[in-house]
Image 1 (cartoon, rainbow, N blue to C red):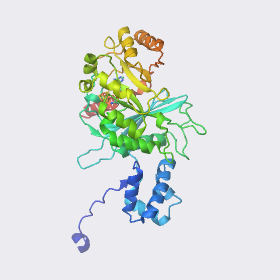
Image 2: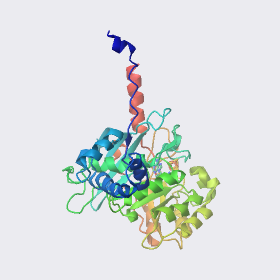
Image 3: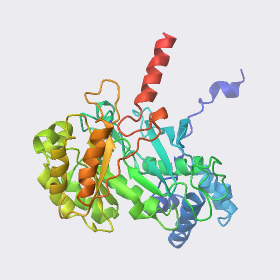
Image 4: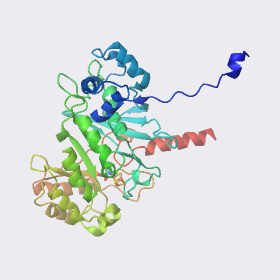
Length: 395
Ligand code: SAH
Ligand code: SF4
Protein backbone atom coordinates (compact mmCIF):
# COMPACT_ATOMS: atom_id res chain seq x y z
CA UNK A 1 0.00 0.00 0.00
CA UNK A 2 1.46 3.39 -0.92
CA UNK A 3 1.58 6.34 1.50
CA UNK A 4 -0.64 8.27 -0.87
CA UNK A 5 -3.48 5.78 -0.97
CA UNK A 6 -3.17 5.12 2.78
CA UNK A 7 -3.85 8.77 3.56
CA UNK A 8 -6.38 9.68 0.89
CA UNK A 9 -10.00 9.73 1.92
CA UNK A 10 -12.21 7.05 0.41
CA UNK A 11 -13.96 8.27 -2.71
CA UNK A 12 -17.13 10.12 -1.78
CA UNK A 13 -20.03 8.79 -3.83
CA UNK A 14 -20.70 11.13 -6.74
CA UNK A 15 -23.95 13.03 -6.19
CA UNK A 16 -26.68 11.50 -8.36
CA UNK A 17 -27.26 13.54 -11.47
CA UNK A 18 -30.74 14.86 -12.13
CA UNK A 19 -32.54 13.68 -15.22
CA UNK A 20 -34.02 16.48 -17.28
CA UNK A 21 -36.69 14.16 -18.65
CA UNK A 22 -40.15 15.05 -17.40
CA UNK A 23 -39.35 18.61 -16.28
CA UNK A 24 -41.68 21.50 -17.06
CA UNK A 25 -40.35 24.47 -19.05
CA UNK A 26 -39.98 26.43 -15.79
CA UNK A 27 -38.04 23.59 -14.13
CA UNK A 28 -35.83 23.23 -17.19
CA UNK A 29 -35.09 26.97 -16.97
CA UNK A 30 -34.15 26.59 -13.28
CA UNK A 31 -31.86 23.68 -14.15
CA UNK A 32 -30.11 25.77 -16.82
CA UNK A 33 -29.69 28.68 -14.41
CA UNK A 34 -27.57 26.45 -12.18
CA UNK A 35 -25.03 26.51 -15.03
CA UNK A 36 -24.92 30.33 -14.72
CA UNK A 37 -26.16 30.95 -18.24
CA UNK A 38 -27.15 34.55 -18.95
CA UNK A 39 -30.89 35.03 -18.57
CA UNK A 40 -31.41 35.91 -22.27
CA UNK A 41 -29.80 32.62 -23.24
CA UNK A 42 -31.87 30.53 -20.82
CA UNK A 43 -35.10 30.96 -22.78
CA UNK A 44 -33.55 30.00 -26.08
CA UNK A 45 -31.85 26.96 -24.55
CA UNK A 46 -35.07 25.85 -22.85
CA UNK A 47 -36.78 25.83 -26.25
CA UNK A 48 -33.91 23.87 -27.82
CA UNK A 49 -33.76 21.30 -25.04
CA UNK A 50 -37.52 20.97 -25.02
CA UNK A 51 -37.54 20.10 -28.68
CA UNK A 52 -34.73 17.53 -28.34
CA UNK A 53 -36.13 15.91 -25.22
CA UNK A 54 -39.82 15.80 -26.05
CA UNK A 55 -40.09 16.01 -29.84
CA UNK A 56 -37.03 13.96 -30.81
CA UNK A 57 -36.88 11.87 -27.66
CA UNK A 58 -33.05 11.93 -27.56
CA UNK A 59 -31.22 10.06 -24.82
CA UNK A 60 -27.86 11.78 -25.19
CA UNK A 61 -26.84 15.46 -24.97
CA UNK A 62 -24.44 14.89 -27.87
CA UNK A 63 -27.40 14.41 -30.20
CA UNK A 64 -28.42 18.04 -29.60
CA UNK A 65 -26.75 19.40 -32.68
CA UNK A 66 -27.75 23.05 -32.33
CA UNK A 67 -26.35 23.23 -28.78
CA UNK A 68 -22.65 24.08 -28.61
CA UNK A 69 -20.26 21.28 -27.77
CA UNK A 70 -19.10 23.15 -24.65
CA UNK A 71 -22.62 23.50 -23.30
CA UNK A 72 -23.41 19.87 -24.15
CA UNK A 73 -20.41 18.86 -22.06
CA UNK A 74 -21.50 21.05 -19.15
CA UNK A 75 -25.03 19.64 -19.31
CA UNK A 76 -23.71 16.07 -19.31
CA UNK A 77 -21.53 16.81 -16.26
CA UNK A 78 -24.50 17.82 -14.17
CA UNK A 79 -27.56 16.20 -15.72
CA UNK A 80 -28.73 13.09 -17.53
CA UNK A 81 -31.62 12.23 -19.83
CA UNK A 82 -32.14 8.93 -18.02
CA UNK A 83 -35.43 7.11 -18.24
CA UNK A 84 -36.85 4.86 -15.56
CA UNK A 85 -35.97 1.23 -16.04
CA UNK A 86 -38.37 -1.07 -17.90
CA UNK A 87 -38.15 -4.20 -15.75
CA UNK A 88 -40.34 -6.32 -17.98
CA UNK A 89 -42.44 -6.15 -21.08
CA UNK A 90 -45.35 -8.44 -21.89
CA UNK A 91 -47.08 -8.48 -25.24
CA UNK A 92 -50.57 -9.94 -25.53
CA UNK A 93 -51.77 -11.86 -28.56
CA UNK A 94 -54.10 -8.90 -29.27
CA UNK A 95 -51.19 -6.43 -29.32
CA UNK A 96 -51.80 -5.03 -25.83
CA UNK A 97 -48.50 -4.35 -24.10
CA UNK A 98 -47.77 -4.12 -20.42
CA UNK A 99 -44.58 -2.67 -19.02
CA UNK A 100 -43.39 -2.90 -15.44
CA UNK A 101 -41.45 0.32 -14.84
CA UNK A 102 -39.13 0.92 -11.90
CA UNK A 103 -38.75 4.55 -10.91
CA UNK A 104 -35.45 5.68 -9.34
CA UNK A 105 -35.78 6.43 -5.58
CA UNK A 106 -37.02 9.99 -4.93
CA UNK A 107 -35.36 10.18 -1.47
CA UNK A 108 -33.32 8.11 0.98
CA UNK A 109 -36.38 6.30 2.35
CA UNK A 110 -37.87 5.45 -1.04
CA UNK A 111 -36.91 2.05 -2.40
CA UNK A 112 -37.89 2.97 -5.94
CA UNK A 113 -41.52 2.60 -6.89
CA UNK A 114 -42.71 0.12 -9.44
CA UNK A 115 -45.72 0.80 -11.55
CA UNK A 116 -47.34 -0.76 -14.55
CA UNK A 117 -48.33 0.97 -17.70
CA UNK A 118 -50.55 -0.56 -20.37
CA UNK A 119 -50.76 0.18 -24.10
CA UNK A 120 -53.89 -0.77 -26.04
CA UNK A 121 -53.71 -0.53 -29.85
CA UNK A 122 -56.90 -0.25 -31.90
CA UNK A 123 -57.40 0.33 -35.61
CA UNK A 124 -57.88 4.09 -35.26
CA UNK A 125 -55.95 4.87 -32.08
CA UNK A 126 -53.41 3.73 -29.56
CA UNK A 127 -54.27 4.33 -25.91
CA UNK A 128 -51.79 4.46 -23.07
CA UNK A 129 -53.14 3.85 -19.58
CA UNK A 130 -50.94 5.67 -17.06
CA UNK A 131 -50.73 5.75 -13.27
CA UNK A 132 -50.80 8.86 -11.09
CA UNK A 133 -49.87 7.26 -7.75
CA UNK A 134 -48.20 4.14 -6.46
CA UNK A 135 -51.17 2.33 -4.91
CA UNK A 136 -54.23 4.32 -3.84
CA UNK A 137 -55.47 5.66 -0.50
CA UNK A 138 -59.08 5.01 -1.49
CA UNK A 139 -60.57 1.61 -0.92
CA UNK A 140 -63.10 0.85 -3.63
CA UNK A 141 -64.16 -2.69 -2.83
CA UNK A 142 -63.91 -4.04 -6.41
CA UNK A 143 -60.43 -2.60 -7.11
CA UNK A 144 -57.21 -4.42 -6.40
CA UNK A 145 -55.13 -1.23 -6.30
CA UNK A 146 -57.08 -0.15 -3.21
CA UNK A 147 -55.69 -3.16 -1.30
CA UNK A 148 -52.05 -2.16 -1.79
CA UNK A 149 -50.30 -0.82 1.29
CA UNK A 150 -47.61 1.40 -0.16
CA UNK A 151 -48.96 4.70 -1.42
CA UNK A 152 -47.22 7.78 -2.69
CA UNK A 153 -47.84 10.38 -5.35
CA UNK A 154 -45.88 10.02 -8.56
CA UNK A 155 -43.83 13.08 -9.48
CA UNK A 156 -44.47 14.97 -12.70
CA UNK A 157 -41.31 13.39 -14.08
CA UNK A 158 -42.56 9.91 -13.26
CA UNK A 159 -45.93 10.52 -14.90
CA UNK A 160 -44.42 11.98 -18.08
CA UNK A 161 -41.75 9.31 -18.30
CA UNK A 162 -44.45 6.63 -18.69
CA UNK A 163 -45.39 8.21 -22.02
CA UNK A 164 -41.76 8.66 -23.09
CA UNK A 165 -40.88 5.07 -22.25
CA UNK A 166 -43.96 3.80 -24.12
CA UNK A 167 -43.19 5.89 -27.20
CA UNK A 168 -39.63 4.62 -27.17
CA UNK A 169 -40.75 1.02 -26.89
CA UNK A 170 -43.23 1.56 -29.72
CA UNK A 171 -40.69 3.29 -31.99
CA UNK A 172 -42.83 6.41 -31.78
CA UNK A 173 -40.00 9.01 -31.87
CA UNK A 174 -38.34 10.22 -35.10
CA UNK A 175 -35.67 7.79 -36.26
CA UNK A 176 -36.97 4.79 -34.30
CA UNK A 177 -38.58 1.76 -35.91
CA UNK A 178 -42.09 0.79 -34.83
CA UNK A 179 -42.86 -2.89 -34.20
CA UNK A 180 -43.89 -4.59 -37.41
CA UNK A 181 -46.81 -6.56 -35.96
CA UNK A 182 -49.63 -5.12 -38.05
CA UNK A 183 -51.41 -4.09 -34.83
CA UNK A 184 -49.64 -0.98 -33.51
CA UNK A 185 -50.90 1.93 -35.67
CA UNK A 186 -48.05 3.29 -37.84
CA UNK A 187 -47.60 5.41 -40.96
CA UNK A 188 -47.17 9.01 -42.07
CA UNK A 189 -48.61 11.34 -39.42
CA UNK A 190 -49.91 8.39 -37.38
CA UNK A 191 -49.04 8.17 -33.70
CA UNK A 192 -48.64 4.83 -31.95
CA UNK A 193 -49.82 6.60 -28.78
CA UNK A 194 -52.65 8.97 -29.73
CA UNK A 195 -54.67 8.86 -26.49
CA UNK A 196 -53.89 8.83 -22.78
CA UNK A 197 -56.15 7.71 -19.98
CA UNK A 198 -55.32 8.20 -16.31
CA UNK A 199 -56.86 4.87 -15.39
CA UNK A 200 -53.86 3.02 -14.02
CA UNK A 201 -53.03 3.09 -10.34
CA UNK A 202 -54.08 5.89 -8.07
CA UNK A 203 -56.52 8.75 -7.75
CA UNK A 204 -55.28 11.52 -10.09
CA UNK A 205 -57.17 14.29 -8.29
CA UNK A 206 -55.24 13.55 -5.09
CA UNK A 207 -52.11 14.43 -7.06
CA UNK A 208 -53.55 17.33 -8.99
CA UNK A 209 -50.48 19.60 -9.23
CA UNK A 210 -48.25 16.90 -10.68
CA UNK A 211 -51.01 15.60 -12.96
CA UNK A 212 -51.67 19.11 -14.32
CA UNK A 213 -47.95 19.74 -14.91
CA UNK A 214 -47.68 16.35 -16.65
CA UNK A 215 -50.71 17.18 -18.82
CA UNK A 216 -49.12 20.49 -19.84
CA UNK A 217 -45.92 18.68 -20.87
CA UNK A 218 -47.74 15.89 -22.71
CA UNK A 219 -49.91 18.31 -24.69
CA UNK A 220 -47.24 20.92 -25.51
CA UNK A 221 -47.30 21.39 -29.30
CA UNK A 222 -43.50 21.73 -29.58
CA UNK A 223 -42.89 18.41 -27.88
CA UNK A 224 -44.96 15.33 -27.14
CA UNK A 225 -47.90 17.14 -28.72
CA UNK A 226 -50.86 15.06 -27.63
CA UNK A 227 -54.25 16.68 -28.10
CA UNK A 228 -55.92 17.58 -24.78
CA UNK A 229 -59.14 16.19 -26.19
CA UNK A 230 -57.40 12.85 -26.25
CA UNK A 231 -56.26 12.92 -22.64
CA UNK A 232 -58.84 11.64 -20.14
CA UNK A 233 -58.49 11.86 -16.38
CA UNK A 234 -60.60 9.35 -14.45
CA UNK A 235 -61.67 10.12 -10.90
CA UNK A 236 -63.62 8.23 -8.28
CA UNK A 237 -65.28 11.55 -7.45
CA UNK A 238 -63.03 14.00 -5.60
CA UNK A 239 -65.65 16.73 -6.03
CA UNK A 240 -63.71 19.83 -4.83
CA UNK A 241 -60.92 19.17 -7.34
CA UNK A 242 -63.04 18.43 -10.43
CA UNK A 243 -63.58 22.05 -11.50
CA UNK A 244 -59.93 22.86 -10.89
CA UNK A 245 -58.83 19.98 -13.10
CA UNK A 246 -60.93 21.40 -15.96
CA UNK A 247 -59.75 24.97 -15.47
CA UNK A 248 -56.08 24.15 -15.12
CA UNK A 249 -55.68 21.34 -17.62
CA UNK A 250 -58.51 21.30 -20.18
CA UNK A 251 -58.43 17.49 -19.97
CA UNK A 252 -61.41 15.27 -20.68
CA UNK A 253 -63.15 13.96 -17.58
CA UNK A 254 -64.20 10.43 -16.69
CA UNK A 255 -66.19 9.59 -13.56
CA UNK A 256 -66.12 6.19 -11.90
CA UNK A 257 -69.81 6.13 -11.04
CA UNK A 258 -70.52 2.37 -10.72
CA UNK A 259 -73.77 2.80 -8.76
CA UNK A 260 -76.91 4.89 -9.05
CA UNK A 261 -77.93 4.91 -5.37
CA UNK A 262 -75.94 6.41 -2.53
CA UNK A 263 -76.35 3.38 -0.23
CA UNK A 264 -74.71 1.11 -2.82
CA UNK A 265 -72.11 3.64 -3.98
CA UNK A 266 -71.12 4.21 -0.33
CA UNK A 267 -70.07 0.53 -0.32
CA UNK A 268 -68.45 0.27 -3.74
CA UNK A 269 -66.71 3.66 -3.74
CA UNK A 270 -66.44 4.68 -0.06
CA UNK A 271 -65.46 8.24 -1.05
CA UNK A 272 -69.18 8.61 -1.83
CA UNK A 273 -69.80 9.03 1.91
CA UNK A 274 -67.90 12.29 1.65
CA UNK A 275 -69.17 13.48 -1.74
CA UNK A 276 -72.49 11.91 -2.71
CA UNK A 277 -73.94 11.24 -6.16
CA UNK A 278 -75.91 14.52 -6.29
CA UNK A 279 -72.79 16.62 -5.50
CA UNK A 280 -70.73 14.62 -7.96
CA UNK A 281 -73.20 15.09 -10.79
CA UNK A 282 -73.44 18.82 -10.04
CA UNK A 283 -69.65 19.07 -10.40
CA UNK A 284 -70.04 17.33 -13.78
CA UNK A 285 -72.72 19.80 -14.91
CA UNK A 286 -70.31 22.60 -13.97
CA UNK A 287 -67.23 21.00 -15.57
CA UNK A 288 -65.48 23.66 -17.68
CA UNK A 289 -65.65 22.92 -21.38
CA UNK A 290 -68.08 19.99 -21.21
CA UNK A 291 -70.31 19.97 -24.28
CA UNK A 292 -71.84 17.52 -26.72
CA UNK A 293 -68.53 17.54 -28.55
CA UNK A 294 -66.59 17.08 -25.30
CA UNK A 295 -68.65 14.61 -23.32
CA UNK A 296 -67.93 13.36 -19.84
CA UNK A 297 -67.41 9.60 -19.66
CA UNK A 298 -69.24 7.72 -16.93
CA UNK A 299 -67.58 4.43 -16.09
CA UNK A 300 -69.78 1.68 -14.75
CA UNK A 301 -68.26 -1.62 -13.69
CA UNK A 302 -70.66 -4.54 -14.18
CA UNK A 303 -70.95 -6.53 -10.93
CA UNK A 304 -73.15 -9.59 -10.97
CA UNK A 305 -76.32 -9.16 -8.93
CA UNK A 306 -75.01 -5.94 -7.37
CA UNK A 307 -75.53 -3.02 -9.76
CA UNK A 308 -76.59 -4.65 -13.03
CA UNK A 309 -80.42 -4.77 -13.02
CA UNK A 310 -82.72 -3.18 -15.60
CA UNK A 311 -83.86 -0.75 -12.91
CA UNK A 312 -80.22 0.29 -12.35
CA UNK A 313 -79.82 0.94 -16.09
CA UNK A 314 -82.99 3.05 -16.22
CA UNK A 315 -81.93 5.03 -13.15
CA UNK A 316 -78.52 5.62 -14.70
CA UNK A 317 -80.13 7.15 -17.76
CA UNK A 318 -82.40 9.30 -15.59
CA UNK A 319 -79.53 10.56 -13.43
CA UNK A 320 -77.43 11.62 -16.40
CA UNK A 321 -80.20 13.62 -18.08
CA UNK A 322 -78.92 17.04 -19.11
CA UNK A 323 -75.23 16.12 -18.77
CA UNK A 324 -73.25 15.70 -22.00
CA UNK A 325 -72.32 12.12 -21.22
CA UNK A 326 -70.89 8.91 -22.63
CA UNK A 327 -71.41 5.70 -20.73
CA UNK A 328 -68.67 3.13 -20.56
CA UNK A 329 -69.71 -0.28 -19.27
CA UNK A 330 -66.71 -2.17 -17.90
CA UNK A 331 -66.86 -5.94 -17.36
CA UNK A 332 -65.51 -6.51 -13.84
CA UNK A 333 -61.99 -7.89 -13.87
CA UNK A 334 -61.75 -10.42 -11.10
CA UNK A 335 -58.67 -10.69 -8.91
CA UNK A 336 -57.75 -13.31 -6.33
CA UNK A 337 -60.01 -12.93 -3.30
CA UNK A 338 -62.26 -10.33 -4.93
CA UNK A 339 -65.71 -10.22 -3.34
CA UNK A 340 -67.54 -9.82 -6.68
CA UNK A 341 -68.15 -11.58 -9.96
CA UNK A 342 -68.57 -10.13 -13.41
CA UNK A 343 -72.14 -9.90 -14.70
CA UNK A 344 -73.12 -12.50 -17.30
CA UNK A 345 -72.73 -11.43 -20.88
CA UNK A 346 -76.50 -11.54 -21.54
CA UNK A 347 -77.08 -9.22 -18.55
CA UNK A 348 -74.44 -6.77 -19.77
CA UNK A 349 -76.10 -6.76 -23.20
CA UNK A 350 -79.54 -6.11 -21.73
CA UNK A 351 -78.17 -3.28 -19.57
CA UNK A 352 -76.36 -1.86 -22.57
CA UNK A 353 -79.55 -2.00 -24.71
CA UNK A 354 -81.48 0.09 -22.18
CA UNK A 355 -78.71 2.66 -22.13
CA UNK A 356 -78.45 2.60 -25.93
CA UNK A 357 -82.20 3.00 -26.42
CA UNK A 358 -82.06 6.10 -24.24
CA UNK A 359 -79.73 7.66 -26.81
CA UNK A 360 -76.30 6.85 -25.42
CA UNK A 361 -73.65 5.04 -27.35
CA UNK A 362 -72.69 2.57 -24.64
CA UNK A 363 -69.67 0.65 -25.73
CA UNK A 364 -68.87 -2.23 -23.46
CA UNK A 365 -65.15 -1.99 -22.89
CA UNK A 366 -63.86 -5.16 -24.48
CA UNK A 367 -61.47 -6.82 -22.12
CA UNK A 368 -58.02 -6.44 -23.67
CA UNK A 369 -54.78 -8.14 -22.86
CA UNK A 370 -56.51 -10.74 -20.68
CA UNK A 371 -53.66 -13.19 -21.27
CA UNK A 372 -51.19 -10.74 -19.71
CA UNK A 373 -53.57 -9.44 -16.98
CA UNK A 374 -53.43 -5.93 -18.30
CA UNK A 375 -56.85 -4.89 -17.06
CA UNK A 376 -57.87 -1.98 -14.85
CA UNK A 377 -57.81 -2.57 -11.15
CA UNK A 378 -55.42 -5.47 -11.27
CA UNK A 379 -52.22 -3.82 -12.44
CA UNK A 380 -49.22 -5.07 -10.52
CA UNK A 381 -51.15 -7.87 -8.85
CA UNK A 382 -49.89 -10.56 -11.18
CA UNK A 383 -46.29 -9.35 -10.96
CA UNK A 384 -46.57 -9.45 -7.18
CA UNK A 385 -47.95 -12.97 -7.32
CA UNK A 386 -45.06 -14.08 -9.51
CA UNK A 387 -42.58 -12.50 -7.10
CA UNK A 388 -44.20 -14.21 -4.12
CA UNK A 389 -44.00 -17.50 -6.00
CA UNK A 390 -40.33 -16.87 -6.82
CA UNK A 391 -39.65 -16.11 -3.13
CA UNK A 392 -41.37 -19.31 -2.07
CA UNK A 393 -39.35 -21.26 -4.63
CA UNK A 394 -36.13 -19.74 -3.29
CA UNK A 395 -36.91 -20.65 0.37
N1 SAH B 1 -58.73 6.19 -9.27
C1 SAH B 1 -59.33 6.56 -10.50
C2 SAH B 1 -58.54 6.10 -11.71
C3 SAH B 1 -57.94 4.73 -11.68
S1 SAH B 1 -59.07 3.35 -11.68
C4 SAH B 1 -60.76 6.10 -10.56
O1 SAH B 1 -61.17 5.35 -9.69
O2 SAH B 1 -61.45 6.54 -11.47
C5 SAH B 1 -59.58 3.31 -13.39
C6 SAH B 1 -60.93 2.64 -13.63
O3 SAH B 1 -60.83 1.23 -13.42
C7 SAH B 1 -62.00 3.15 -12.69
O4 SAH B 1 -63.23 3.36 -13.37
C8 SAH B 1 -62.12 1.99 -11.75
O5 SAH B 1 -63.34 2.01 -11.08
C9 SAH B 1 -61.94 0.81 -12.67
N2 SAH B 1 -61.63 -0.45 -12.00
C10 SAH B 1 -60.93 -0.64 -10.87
N3 SAH B 1 -60.88 -1.96 -10.55
C11 SAH B 1 -61.55 -2.61 -11.51
C12 SAH B 1 -61.84 -3.98 -11.74
N4 SAH B 1 -61.38 -4.93 -10.95
N5 SAH B 1 -62.57 -4.31 -12.85
C13 SAH B 1 -62.99 -3.33 -13.68
N6 SAH B 1 -62.74 -2.03 -13.52
C14 SAH B 1 -62.04 -1.66 -12.44
FE1 SF4 C 1 -58.30 4.00 -6.10
FE2 SF4 C 1 -59.61 4.22 -8.46
FE3 SF4 C 1 -59.05 1.80 -7.38
FE4 SF4 C 1 -60.89 3.33 -6.24
S1 SF4 C 1 -60.97 2.44 -8.32
S2 SF4 C 1 -59.25 2.21 -5.15
S3 SF4 C 1 -60.02 5.37 -6.55
S4 SF4 C 1 -57.56 3.31 -8.11
